[in-house]
Length: 419
Image (cartoon, rainbow, N blue to C red; front, side, top):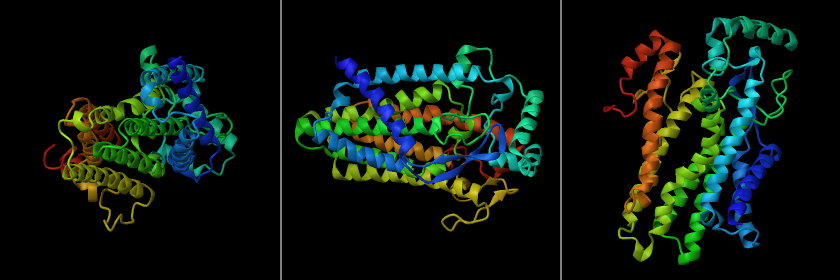
């Protein structure tokens, strides 16, 4: 019966998040990615993540107080929740695989990355499309489809595992209509990121509540861990508008990799350090965290956050206002296209270093008594170092000699003066 409760709770939670994503209002903004079949038009998004997080943070304690749910439910039903996340990841991935295979060949997204406003602006072929925006939308769509039929290669690789893992569509939407790029503002990618973030928050809060029930108080390690991870989630949702300009949105299609990552890996692996923090408290903790240790942990986290967030925000504002300074830093570029000042003068992927520093700080509260918390920063190393190599290959193809010049100006890949 416990397994059934765990399964049902995950399904119900995901459904409630979907309802909130559909109904909770928020500012509507244009993103970096353009609609595939109307490449002169940018996709629109409703940014309501912070409001939904606030609803969640109010609803959870109220539900616990009223006895609707148990605060330690996820702790006591953890593996059934993980299993439910795995199954839902498989089911949703299969749905989007079938959906992608059913698309007509000339409707499939065959490019390496999704069309973006920057790519359109610098591509003569795309620029011609921008000058044709005065044409009726139906005529523009017909011309685009004719060109795609002539130029595009099949979207699938004839390999089920590859197509299932990677996916077919960059930015699928609920009720997406072939006649209009804005038939729905419910973007599946943004919904999955929101589900993952709120599920992660639920796991951390459940562990903290479980410790409070058992010990009558929270350990210093748990306070630091819960506080930093909650800040990590909230500030991510606050910067949804910046996330619209990042790699995941324009370079990754929606397949098993991204779906399973959001529904299972993100919420249940990222907080792997919380179990060590939960179990090792009081006399059972041979190496309790001191006040100075907590202070240094917090400092490391916010140094990483300032590095990652500062770099991402600088690039974001460069994309929307190339000539304006960011935090007093005047933008300098390679031929007007590649930013090479501020954070981006230190290394070519300085934001990756920030992510690794934050993950390391989150491993410290429980990492002194167990090796498990260190899986989190090691995951970032295993993910981001190969991604940097792949991104460099993509940029070399995209920018050509401009990228070679940038590499001369900024010789370090991730860690300044070291790598």
